Image (cartoon, rainbow, N blue to C red; front, side):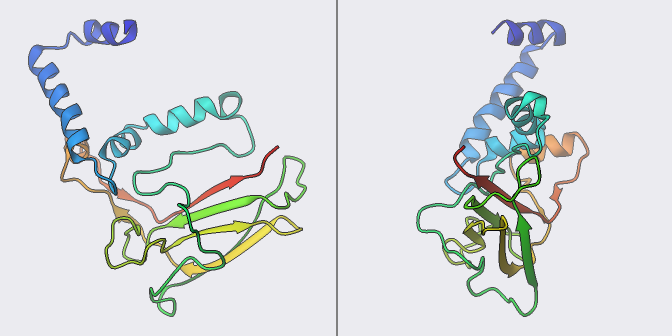
Length: 194
């Protein structure tokens, strides 16, 4: 609370600005649904989620692999994951993507039996939770690393995509004269006890 009050004093927040801020907070909640988290989208657009991850994963993120933000459309594999492939009926022949990766410790030794959750957007830039045309759990998979620490899968090439700008996050980006595109990317969540 002291930091919040100090910010208001430093910025000399006007009543009009305060009312606008309250409107934005309310709109974030109103625009959040089961498949779209406007609040998390705002946190990512402001760089807050990345900062929180950096501060909470290792000594000021000075570790080999730090966590990054979940993103508004992702999250780890839900119950009933598929394995081996990350696609259902999307056009593999038009957008083939083959991936092989390795999980290793800080000394370069393979980590055997690590659980790897993977998810990504489709070739048209939509996650399965956003697109009623995609099958449940499409472009999401769970894998276990082999004896050499490797895992692999085949999928379709993800596309870059625009984040929604029809809500408070769009207003923020427009006010900052920033674009709303994310580059094509994959999400990995890797875990092994110990």
